[in-house]
Image (cartoon, rainbow, N blue to C red; front, side, top):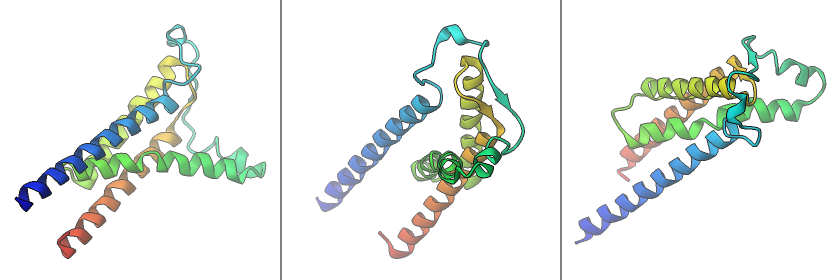
Length: 153
């Protein structure tokens, strides 16, 4: 009976984590693509593109806007950590590299969508930082899984 109760608790926990993950995905898309200025009338008309790596951050540093730099730079990493962690947690078959590749593809889809819909700026920086965040999340989850396995939790 305890085994059944434990499995049920684990299933509920897994369902909760999955629900939280989908809320996270919706929030991520809301802040990156479906912003207040999102409009189908902007399709392929207002897109901005920056392919120069980290060039948008340099003026913040030079201007003394260190907190804005940290917010944007670190934020682009932090927003993708849950993706890497979730992918590795949900499917043990996902390697860290596979999860990172999925993070890269999702970030690329977001950046292309921003360009197509004319919201925000499509930047190579975001692609690099988002992918780094996914990698960090995947590695952190692997570390947590290893610790839990060693402690048999």
